[in-house]
Image (cartoon, rainbow, N blue to C red; front, side, top):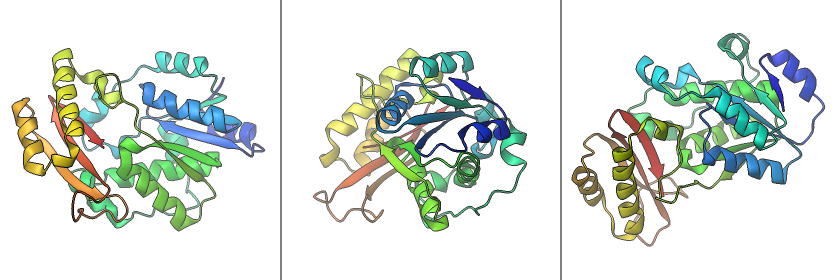
Length: 264
């Protein structure tokens, strides 16, 4: 695996690659990231992974500082998975140039996480837009756990006619039903136990759930701070007319000081 910290050196190396697939991360890699990389390795010729904790998408300095970091462990994982290239830029390398395309934010930014995390998706699209400009991958692999992010990146790519195809990948969960997330590293054992109970109760009884029942489950398991509980028809992003419609439940909440999201 070749590691790059400078975009010019990276671009010189990957300039002529035609089937390059890209997995963007903020490090603290987990089984979800590994699944994305394995799919990329299986389906496409060359894989590049980025590790960059983007300060522009955090809503507080405390959240940015507390985001889990373990770069040596990440490098070991990527070497084991036989990743071809790792790009670890600094702030100047990413933000001190004018990208080709303007950021396009679809109105879906106003829903779900956009209600409480002002500027978050602008920060996400800003950095993704720049990565696409630098790397010019043919494919970018993103997880469905971050459905809103995936949707907004897709609309940005379509609007700007960027020749990169999104490969959406299913959410990866551990044996307790918890979706893998870097932020899970900030949870204590007791918090993880409560989280598993919450997720499994909601997933098991999805067809019989409403907002009040879900909030009751949170309260019973001592989770008081809830950002949102939303039911959305995935085909039109509106509240489903009835439970026969294909829909997902979207939730964002805090376990202790750690904010988590999920959908199923």
